[in-house]
Image (cartoon, rainbow over all chains, first blue to last red):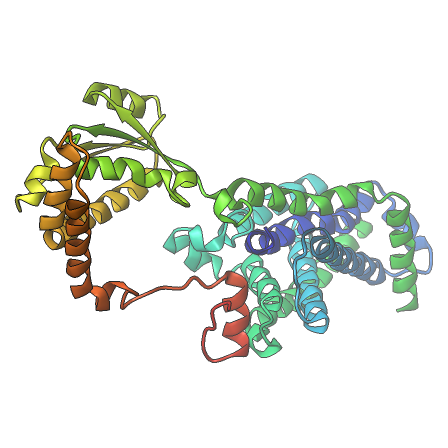
Length: 203
Length: 225
């Protein structure tokens, strides 16, 4: 059972935890739409601090959810997740990439509805192509080629790699992809959110 | 940064008070993976292998087909292979249509006699088009059987002929005749002893857990002792 779980669970984890990370970013748009943001900003909080706090919360929730899943799978099904130190690096990288991906997607949307549709499409397509729903090895060749460039695939490679006791050096490629996506996505989202919310406040 | 941390802590406290939606979403990947593993993965042991149902039309009704009938009742095969002997082709095809069998195997008339006379035979195989994997398993099994029967007939033609005569005769076989057949068989088998006992090529199955560890920690694969 645990061998089969190791094939399925990392992809499922990456896909479903993204839905948990959506909550804080939905709140950014929700608070803008409900006119709560101007009231919040009346307190000694800047716009960028507000956005940063939401993104940080997204990161923490994703990391905690991943950790919870790792612990549950280890305790309930005897899955071995390898070196705890490497695992924590992988979890942090996955959570960072999730934050970057979600924040960037949400920062492109004008309304909450728009963001929900956009994020659902992005998450589903990435999960389908990146092996989040089916074993990646069973996908046709052209989808596998596309899937190589999805964060879901990098996350699966990193999580499976650490479970298979691969050294950190061998995990560098997917980890770098995850961290790069996380950093770049977060940075772009930070500025896009800042600009969008500042415009909204001006109106 | 202090303000940011205060905002995050405040929000996380709110999440802590109402964690159910997060916990539900967190439980989904585990639940779905376990469900899929239970459906497609089984328990990993031999008991989890599917049972192959094969319809057999035995038109030969002679020594070799009689031996074949008794084979699946022995050892591990008894758990994974169920033979349904049918009286005619239509009955076998009906079993395929109802998906009660993965394939229909027709053993030809006079198969044993032709084999022992060195003549070629053709075993017919009807695969169930509604199934994907199991008919292919039967196909592989039948091709293996064909090779095995050809080899056995080539090697043990005379002792098999003698054994067939013994079985056919209504008299209780004489000790000398039984010893003769056994001795002749042993002599024939002794010629190929080097290749068969034990076979020159063997295979060992390596468990996934072993090769995953071996691939990272050692240069070569080490099968489980």
